Image (cartoon, rainbow, N blue to C red; front, side):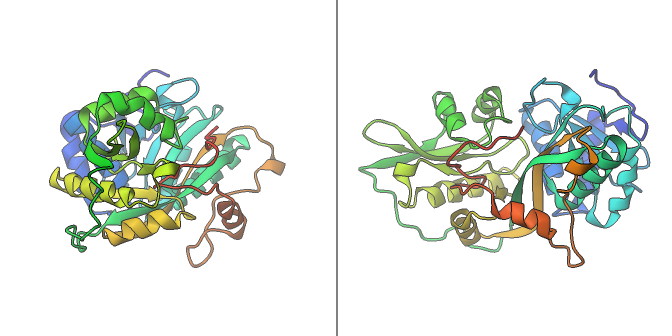
Length: 337
C-alpha cells in the first residue's frame, strides 16, 4: 500500500509537527510512553522509517497511529502493521479507526506489537464487526516503567574479571543477538544492524573466547529491548549488570526507560523491580485475521469490571511459554503469525 497523506479520519504528521505531538502525548503518560519515545527515537536516530498520523480532530481526539508497527511482516507492506495510541478513558473514540477504510485494509491481516489491552480489545471488536475477524496468536506483556526513585548506584556483585567482561555491543555481535531474540520472527536482522550501529547496548562476553553471554540494547521505540542471557551463563548476575548499565545510559540520553516483561517471568520482574521499574499497564501483541467465522471469535481481549483481563484470556495468558529475559528466551521460538 502506497503512503497516503490523508485518510478518512487521520492525517500524516509533518516532521516539524512531531515535537508538538510529543508535548500532547506527555499528558497521557504512562500509557502514551511507547508512542512518545518512538517519535523521539525517530527524530534523534532515524533507526527505522515510520509514518505518523494523528486524528483530524487532534488534540480533542488524542488518537494517533504509526505505520509500520512492527519492522517485519510477511509481505513487508508499510500498512500491514500498525502502532496505535488512544487514552484508556477515551476508548470510545476508537470509532475513528473503525471508519478508517483508507489507511487500513480490513480484509488483510494486521500485525500489532505490544499495545494496551484496552486498545486491543477495541480493535478486536472492530475486526469482529467489520470482517468477522479475530485476534490470533496473542502474547501478553506487562509494561514496566522506571520511576527514577531507586538508586541506580545499587551495589552489585562485581563481574568476575577473569571470566567475563562487559563492553558495548558492535556489529559483529548482531547475528548472535538476533538468534537469541525470542521475537526474531517480527524484528528483522536489518533492524538489529541499525540498532547496534545507532543506539547504545551492552553485552557481557566470555573472556576466554569472546562468546556473548548476556546483552541488552535500546530499541527503536525508545525503551529497552529484552535482556537475554544464554542458558549456560544464567544465575551469575550478568543480567542485572547489563540492565543497570543500560538503564543509566538511556536516562543520560534523555529517555524514560521502560521494558516489556512477560507476566510469568518472575526473574525479569524481580531484576527490573530492583532497578526501580514499576508496572504501568498490561499490553498484548498479536495478529488480527479477517474472515475467521463467528464460531472462531470467542477468544477476545476484554476487561472485567475491575479492569482485569477476562477469565478466558487469563487462562491463555497462563499458558504462555516460560522464558528468561524481558520478552523471554523461550524454550521454543514464539510464533507471531
